[in-house]
Length: 308
Image (tube, rainbow, N blue to C red; front, side):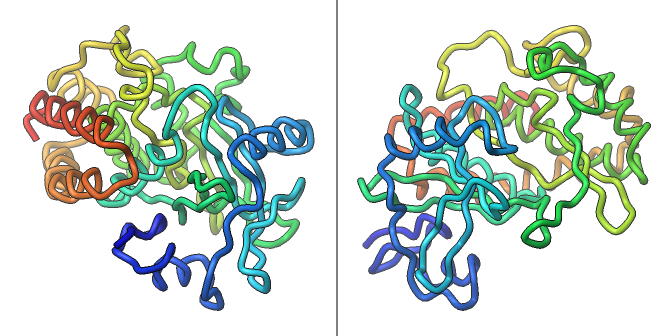
């Protein structure tokens, strides 16, 4: 038996019916991407200047062709982003998909995402764009680098404290968004995501309300990069490492975000309730055995540090 790379269900074929229906109710099968991982990276490099999505990982814009049961790569107006295997860092698609599913398990809002097979048998990661509502219509979206007046090159030169002030300044209901930010920050600490820089947080305008966008670019960078002295891309209380419960709960949640004890406890309870699901997701994920073990060891250590 195999597992569906979209839902992780056991399947006889490549994909589960549930996984296909998440993509489209009219989909009954899904063809492999017509490019190998290497060809996808080549296509991403060729199309980079034509696309609005950027970053270190190779990315392609795609639409879902229901008639032909396939993702088609496009230059413009894509509804999905596809990330192939990286040429240096193994299993980034499997890592990102797993981490995003773990985020969903603790009720962090995430877009539709999953893994899709390529013609060479490799897996690529896909995520549905949340800033598109029609072929040429975009939802207003700004990342925190834009809001802070920072360039791509300076996306790490910022503090969590200043980021919180941006939430207070721009969000329609800042108190609610600060709760959501707190959960995301703790989650990324727990799963070893050391790369949550300014461009990995965004505000979106929906129904005349400005709020945090759905989560994106969540992955365990610690098991990718190995030993790293930093635990956060942005400074918190003047540092990027050696965080403990005092810094993350008392200082961040209580002093900086001004959350009361009841709200803090609810966030911690949400994370606690997701623990068993997290370890199960790791076990049934598409990561190899060594990376599964590394992920679980890190997660256990950091859960213990926060006494969750």
